[in-house]
Amino acid sequence: MGAEANASYNFLIYGRTGWIGGLLGKLCESQGISYTYGSGRLQDRQSLIADIETVKPSHVFNAAGVTGRPNVDWCESHKVETIRTNVAGTLTLADICREKALVLINYATGCIFEYDSGHVLGSGVGFKEEDTPNFTGSFYSKTKAMVEELLKNYENVCTLRVRMPISSDLSNPRNFITKIARYEKVVDIPNSMTILDELLPISIEMAKRNLTGIYNFTNPGVVSHNEILEMYREYIDPSFTWKNFTLEEQAKVIVAPRSNNELDATKLKTEFPEMLSIKESLIKFVFEPNKKTGVKA
Image (cartoon, rainbow, N blue to C red; front, side, top):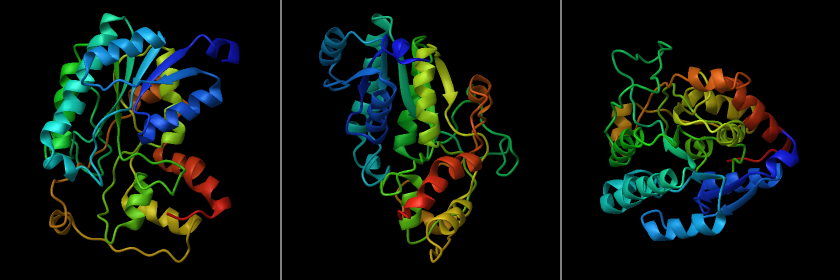
């Protein structure tokens, strides 16, 4: 699609200070798409209406939300703040967008499932878009599952289930690779993950196509912690070493359990057949580009 076509779009993006929100702005810039960061707070209805009336967007993107710092354990002791943004705020934005007949691209989470008897680790059977969330181990995930269920009633919303996001920026502390490379010990479990360098441009294309409903927003297949760290050693730092520990040992150093799952990416892959599998995407978008620069986590 040429620059002329892109000139007809005008995106309103929430989450300017967030990782995904920041990357979205850069992508719009590189594609010549007009965009504005929302200045309103998600839970303040009037401030969102004012943003929309000022910007007159063609599409709205929500990359705002509370994930907690340094991690989701924060949400366990800040429950009201988590609800205010992740539930009340997201629903308010969806509701206003519906009133204004605007498609809302909502970056959500796939950390609302965990392997079970019907989706056994290593079986290749992933959770589908219509499956009911079965992971409520953390308060963060619990609120995300609640809001996803409610958003199903908003026909203008496109919910993207992001998991363990990874980007080519290995200096970013929120990058899953950077996180696990810096941990003292890591578990080793295959998981579905999201390569932002490949999938964020796809989310912009989804807005252009006015796609709505739930999408598992992960690359096809799974990759384990050790497989990623082996690639890290091979491409970035030959002297890199790490230690594993079990889920039982991990449970002693975290407040809330973490989600481990495989999501079925067939729906997204059908819409975007060019999408790479998780391991191919890691090599092409993350490790190969960093091999040249030698940037370490």
